[in-house]
Length: 176
Ligand SMILES: CC(C)(COP(=O)(O)OP(=O)(O)OC[C@H]1O[C@@H](n2cnc3c(N)ncnc32)[C@H](O)[C@@H]1OP(=O)(O)O)[C@@H](O)C(=O)NCCC(=O)NCCS
Image 1 (tube, rainbow, N blue to C red):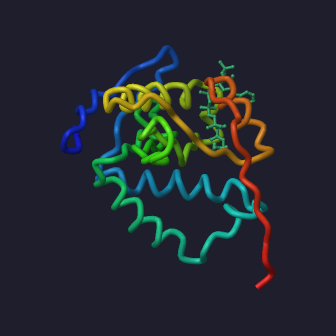
Image 2 (cartoon, helix red, strand yellow):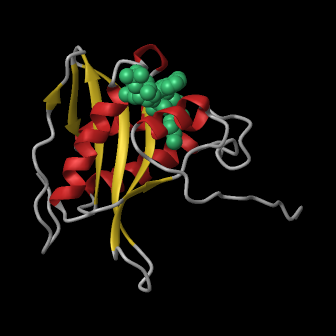
């Protein structure tokens, strides 16, 4: 278990649901699985103006970046397993809010992905429950995330799990 100085330690997260979904916090030993799932997520939206622009060496870059994230005490990467196989991922980061606004810190959820053959079996629901416990144990009272516009699964899932839309991200290319 990891904890940052002055922060409430995280609670154990392993859990089992009726559909045999087990969730655990990833460790550096899970780097291969984390890279595979998170790069698969990036490849899920090839036409997206932001996420569709993968660099050719994305796998190498991902390994370095995710290895650093797996060692960080300010975030947790959760893995969802069915029958012992890793099928889903969710990352949760303790983030700093604007000094002018409450709350000062919040939980930012990103990199959420479930393998296509394992969807609609409650994996995301179980991953989010684990992230909820992790965030609450750190004294965080709000969770935020961005989702790809027009993704039916993502939009339905986040609405079903209690996330309201409060902001839109707009992009305008400057034609370099
Ligand atoms: C979005 C995603 C993570 C959902 O994962 P999942 O494990 O299938 O979700 P769950 O089974 O826990 O579903 C939880 C609830 O969300 C809703 N939901 C999930 N997928 C849905 C879909 N395709 N259509 C309608 N509602 C959906 C349902 O209300 C569901 O509850 P129910 O099955 O009891 O009705 C998965 O579809 C995925 O990886 N999609 C591609 C990547 C992606 O879009 N990631 C999100 C980036 S922001």
